[in-house]
Amino acid sequence: MPAWAFPLLCVCLLLSGFAGLLYETLWARFLYLYLGHTSHAQAIVLSVFMGGIALGSATLGRWADRLGAKAAPASTYYLLTAYAWMEILIGFYCGLYPDLFKRMSTVYTIIGERWYEQWPGAVTGLKAAFSVLTMLIPTFLMGGTIPVLVRLFRPAGNAIGRTAGWLNAANTIGAVAGTLLAGFYLIEKTGLSLSMYVGAFANIFVGILVMGFRRKIVGSVQAAPPPPPRPSGEAAYGEGRQSLALAGIFISGFASFALEVLWARVIGLSLGSSVYALSQKGASSEAA
Image 1 (cartoon, rainbow, N blue to C red):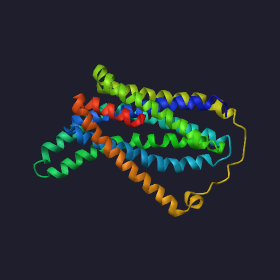
Image 2: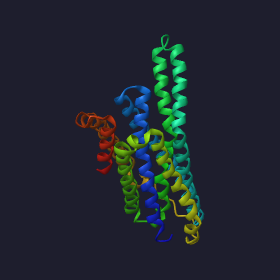
Image 3: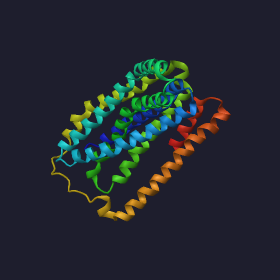
Image 4: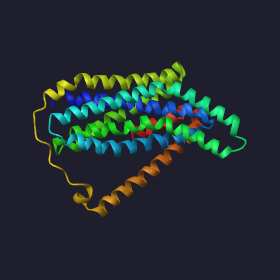
């Protein structure tokens, strides 16, 4: 793979991270208008955002392993194509989100007017379900982007830790920029819909860029047999040690995101705006 390919893909992940946290901030504002409660909106957005990414990472990560198990350069071609289409689909979906949000609000208004007095709990649950479903598709796709690119560089061997670190760092730097720009500038200056279009443009641009350079990257990859299968986590470290590590990661994630919601409330007391507080909280946690 050419030396310039890795920096190029880092820039792509930077723009992808920028769009991702831009969406998270905007979704929180959209759902505040829909749900009428800032804390509920932030909790739902954070839960669906991270839950969708986790589901996508687990599911699409296994798919990436199957693509990467093919012989080179076919594996490189398939992985780059998969990544490009993920970015393009995220961009198209999020570009349509403002219109989808309007339709969702209209449908809920009709349902609420007819049945809220008879089944208030069911109607409220439907409102929350609408909120979750509209964010699940793009977050699921977001979860697959880093695993696909990490699998692309996996045959490099011992450098995989450093490679994954740089990819994740680029994505995180973009995320910090996205949440700050959304909260402190874009929403106020351009509104929610146009701000969503900025993120959508970034995703689609990344997808088209990767598609454009795909053949050059693949053309420089030498033919090679499929990489040998690697041992699973249980085989390499033992089932007990892997389970202990996963449990520790789960507890750490639970605590960190519970604190993230609380930080947003505390910061809101000083900044006086839920949008500013959410952006400050998101930027701080991502930067850390």
